[in-house]
Length: 262
Length: 37
Image (cartoon, rainbow over all chains, first blue to last red):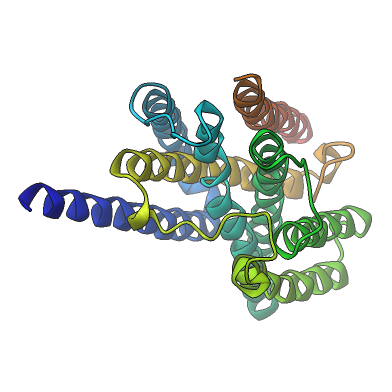
């Protein structure tokens, strides 16, 4: 009885820690974007924390998370696939926040936040889309099926790849930034659709239902929670670095990397 | 097991590859900014 209570409390603690990490990552990136040159020094600490958290997460995956009885060891792909979701959605949400900020103030720093969020969000979305089929093939027998969850996630990826391509084609002008700001804000409408696509599909999908970590065995819940926090730290560090590069390029347009996204 | 290894190798390659790309872009941007100032 007492041990069950402790287990439940720890699971809620892990869930709370993941939510807190997401809020902190978003708040830190918005705060950073307001005065990047003065505040970017803190990114080094975030990078070090991200590496330490990745090492902890990998240690838990290898030595702590149990081998699932039905799927076997391949189920451990779960600990990569699921943590990639939050940075994906958070990156695209930051694109909307940056877009709103830019439309209100016309400050380039908001636009840099929007572009950086989209680019790193696409990286994590790509990871999710690549790793998912590697898990699906041995377990469900297919690399890919055109069901609602998978297809809508692919559409979400295309929406933000198109956003980055648009930025690359129309680099620098206020009209282009205004257009991509609106595009980035409207694009977030796809996120709840993608998330709830599994429920909308009502069983006609290969994809498992949205994970309720409270329903997972404790060791699995803690390991995936550690993965989420680690990936959020990596995400925050990557977005900070991407914003720094965008700010440097803005000071010296010739420095813009050839073929750079955004 | 090979699927599991593939998934984690792909994850490492994607994240490390992007981080290295950012590092190179940052070095290039810093160099160019210093040259122009």
